[in-house]
Length: 365
Image (cartoon, rainbow, N blue to C red; front, side, top):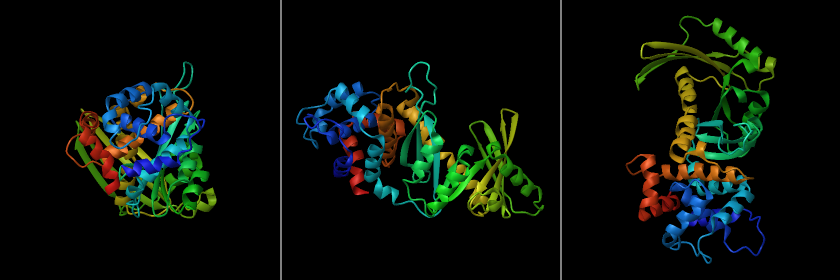
């Protein structure tokens, strides 16, 4: 528990000096409420009152549980970057387990409910860096008005990239993002599409020269009513890095997929820009790892935390509550007991001892 209480001390308090509620205690109550299913400031306050006896076992709560207006005011004011950085300290021991070649997936997720009538669904977005093997959010940055590219570059500057492989979709396959990755000592595996038309054309030409005995990795998956096969090939970029001014471009990867579902067959061919020359098996594994940010993070945020339905809209409120959701998912995943994630989140709200175990486990890791 001490890990939480010390980490939030570094979050700047924008309120007047005569405020009643301690900022650290308010954030702890809000976070635990989200961990147990709260989706709004009103629910945070209600959860806090119902569990006040639990909170008083490790918090002073001199003025009892804050009201929902107080939660709302504070979450609208504090800096989401500072809040996310505080959680980075809480989870620092886990982050240190990242190893050579680990995949860090970069992707954005729109906060669809955090908009007023007439605004685009992409008005507010959270861009995350996700360690796919550890299933851990390394950092999160707000991207307002669809500024995903700038947010992604900012997030790359917040994490240690040396020895890691950064994956992202075709939006991020550009010189500035690649330069940020290379400058941090990382490698990249980026989807290559028509937004880099000349580079894509040259990539296709390189594959046209592949010999019949060129190494190919094949993979097959059967389940959920479908059968999918993939073939992965890697070829040299042949000095095209200089021609396209694309830093550290060493190779291109291609994956040909065939999916059969209920007798219907779909095929696709995807190309990737690579900063190193991996074996085909490593290349396929890297591309597959990227989907962890969609399946293990974004999907869970919608299913377990109902993020798409969240209606927080004002100022920094949507971003800060989005940070709490992502970090609650990180903490819940540290528990190794049996049971689905959904059950563990509900159990945390029902069972006081289980909730305390979830919070205390971070001090022992």
